Length: 212
Image (tube, rainbow, N blue to C red; front, side):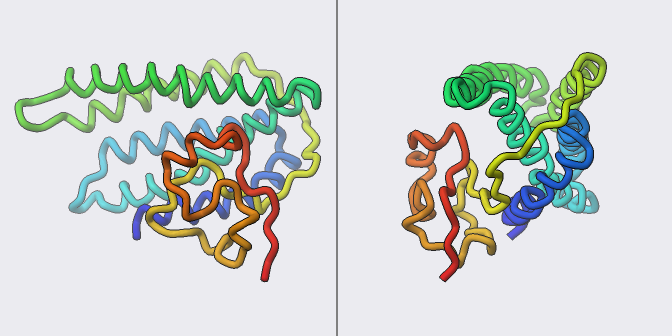
């Protein structure tokens, strides 16, 4: 039930994304997403299953801002800069950088950090989570100092495009329950491995939501 809060959060913030982009611009949107990542890791660092359970729950809820305001807005900005002629190649490149090379390097480094802070049969999870938080903060400062803000046009942006790269094993978001399943690529009942293999993975999955 707690993990489903992340999906609900993502569905809500994807609706707010076009409004936020139009009012504040791409730089502020990305900055908010990066700040959310820093805070999320800090919450995971100090949260626990006792009195700090609220930190873990809030960290899960922050998934919506982290993903929508960083990854999705980044994909929108990539489309804007690449133009119609090169946007498919650009999206393929950003997918390779994030879900390919970035994920490979991230898993390797995360494993080294986890081993470094291993204390016998347990781990110092506070230190393990504070390291990515600190790294995200450094990236945030670098981004603020170097990135030039731009106003981008959201052409054909549909706020119902909420089926991203989610694993729906914990339940389907309410906003999708009335959609015709055959119009969703990949189908809601497909496995996570199928979602990763689909050619639509590099962008949004929901082609059109038709309410019945």
